[in-house]
Length: 167
Image 1 (cartoon, rainbow, N blue to C red):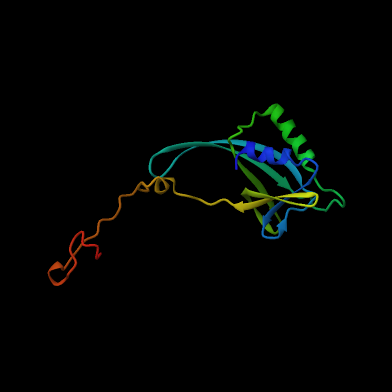
Image 2: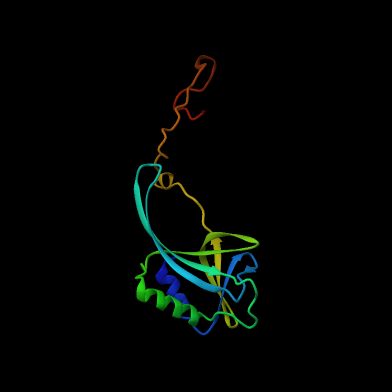
């Protein structure tokens, strides 16, 4: 999900309370804070030798040590933080959104917003783990190492021959 899609969904629901679900049926404490919004421009060379570049927009969440009773962030508050950040830091609208979160029971990691769920007066951002990938293989190329060649032996006693499909 890119930054523009994420912001648009939030801006359509400013009157709702904002939640984040980081694992099945596990939500960030409702008294969370948005502590910072980071923009990371990434340039990398993959194992196939191809240069790649992309932008990530990272929204960091923090749970206070004590729950603030009756304190739950409304989307309008989150949008005011986003507006404040964007006055200083121009955010790439096509940047990939990642949510940085961790607590005593869940080690800090970057999660991807997968979906939004609206129930009553709450909107919950459903998060999923980010996975590594091999971009070279994804392009149908080699992963930077040559593909092993098969050695066919003992052909005289076999019905198997090159290009027969038997091996």
